[in-house]
Image (spheres, rainbow, N blue to C red):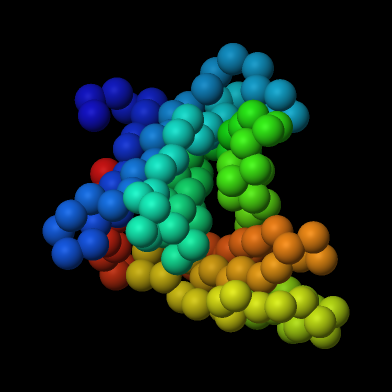
Length: 152
């Protein structure tokens, strides 16, 4: 991609692309935001055989990292209200300390999917089911020098 205000990240498994995310900067008004530009998730896709493995969350984290590097303090997206898969995906939050939140979630009796797990590109992710059986992702960003399997 030649556009400095857009990026596409691709997840590979055994040298085969299995997922992608497209993000860009939006300078127009983005509902619910207070700054400009805003990092914006334009699209994300994971092949069906690779879904529910955290790859979409990893790609989203990479998009958010890219937007922060571009000077954004906010990141947004939207989805159709009748798209249940998309709504579930949108239940992801960035927190300061995943380990601390993990202890809180455990104390509340949540069913864990993935405990805090460090990713090679500088994120610590965890996921659990909320009381309505939605998957909720929490993530924290940390510095790392390791390379990721995600390529832009």
